[in-house]
Length: 128
Image 1 (spheres, rainbow, N blue to C red):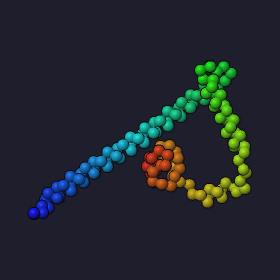
Image 2 (spheres, rainbow, N blue to C red):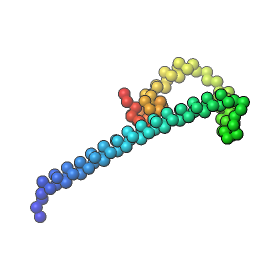
Image 3 (tube, rainbow, N blue to C red):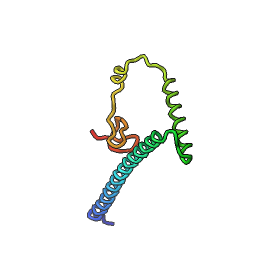
Image 4 (cartoon, rainbow, N blue to C red):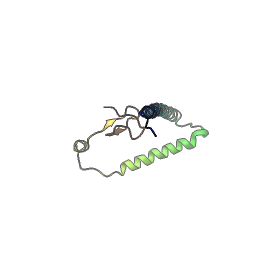
């Protein structure tokens, strides 16, 4: 049985080309998912702005269709205020705390901070 280097080389190149194509496809998929995530965050931000405007504009005359949602938001705001008030008072100055914990890079898509190469929230590359 003869060993054919040309056949082996051709098969190795085929496998390498398939792997490169799959890597390109995976990179494109990540890029698309990051773009989708960024757009979704923008939609959420805009919907939140619309909702905040609506509640402030129609404060005394909230329609029945959204009354429960507005009440839930108000209850949530009250709970957040209560939790904020219950936080223990730190004796360390904020300046010392910032020096002790180095700040990470900020994600260009969602704004999360991390020291990693990719955002732990949305998966976007963190850049330099």
